[in-house]
Length: 147
Image 1 (tube, one colour):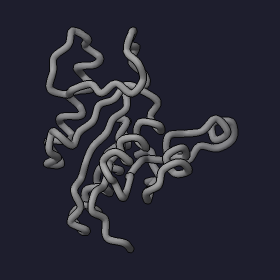
Image 2: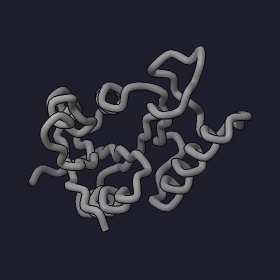
Image 3: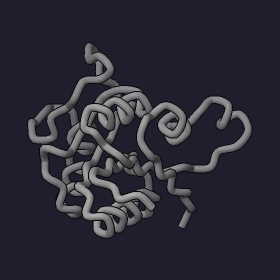
């Protein structure tokens, strides 16, 4: 297994996120790699905000949904000991933004969850599938299981 220097953990704050978080944490500890965190907002209406906009996790807004997402990102980052400068909250299409940040930050491993979709959902694509087929670095797609 290659030694990784920078791992990007992509979370969507689903109930199964803990599986991805634990895998990324263990890989980071085993390899001594820096761990970064990304969450891409694609389910919150953000009028007049273009895709690719980075939302600073330390600024306050009047939007309760956005504040809840910031709080989740910061709680996860704090739990993992991730430097606030290595946490990204971005409005956009998840696959594209994960790939963009990974390239920009010289990430050599992306850890993302995979729901193992089949049929029409597979044809329409998924974040894990998009990342796997379009990024230049290694990808670990953690199979998510319902607890």
